[in-house]
Length: 183
Image (cartoon, rainbow, N blue to C red):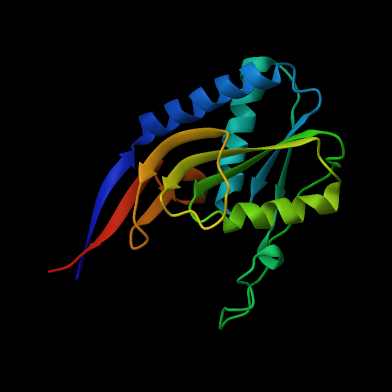
């Protein structure tokens, strides 16, 4: 069995996707006075930080940004042989009555997003939760969760893997699809 890979987004395409998402958010949220951004640990935080930085430049507004560790909200956290070590939340605001834009890198089964919504409720009851993902892996959903804003939609099978490599996490701003090929 060998592993094949192909680039889904190069650096330029990745930045264009983030830019397009930002303009869609501006169109739908206008002044962001009752809107907050929340990245999901670990990789959703990097995407959220980029979106946050770009939105503040484009709008000239201060927009609240936080991130959530969903480790113990996951439905599979007890299935690992090695105990999971949680990261830190950075939520220095409540979401009560606010529009929350939840951000992650890849939407696959939907379980991470469900865990994110569960974790978010500890910070109040938002008026709306919207979902931003850089990559939407269609045809793999286990829960009825769909993103509001998407960088790229790709059709994948379960055996394939999507890797988002951002400079903030030691990568080089690419998104690759890895697939197992039978020899």
